[in-house]
Image 1 (tube, each protein chain N blue to C red):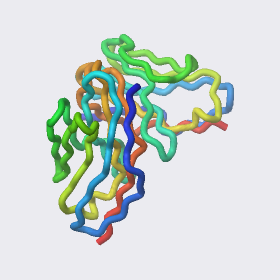
Image 2 (spheres, rainbow over the protein chains, first blue to last red; image 1 turned 30 degrees about the vertical axis):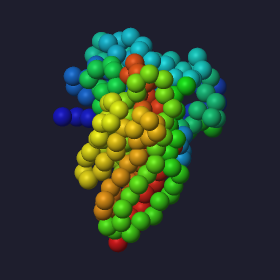
Image 3 (cartoon, chains in turn brown, yellow; image 1 turned 30 degrees about the horizontal axis):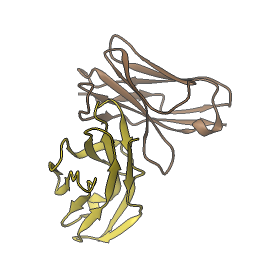
Length: 113
Length: 112
């Protein structure tokens, strides 16, 4: 079975631009979570979606938004990019919405110049 | 608020040495606790978990016990191998299970 997939693998954007990152969960998983991992630090929780509804939100500005589609895939959108948004963005999927095991994708490396 | 504090690395051990990586947490409600591992060039993988006080999670020779009285979830292994070289992350999910908090990670290198 395929694991969690993310696209693109790498991305370079300029300050002020907008970016969309994509995630496909493991088949049968209905929950998708997004994390930001800055080099040398642990992942920081951004969002959790379950059955297309937002179930959790971390301490990130409104420039960050996400959605989940009927097939449970998800997009993370970031507007008005800042240099500080440069990071590895991780997607994780799980069966349910409450604290179960999360399976992580390989991440999208975003560089903002 | 919720947070996880992890022992800083890097940690270097000889093969067959005993490993402890300390993790303490602050949480409201009844969190679940996790250890994730990231091997070189790979994604994060769940190593073990515990969902309530006094539970012991174990996997691949690693163990951690959920200690509510000391708000700790220390990772231990009796005899490390070179293949255990990786970055280890302690994490918690809050009582609702909808928010997750990771520590900063501890890099472990095991030398033959």
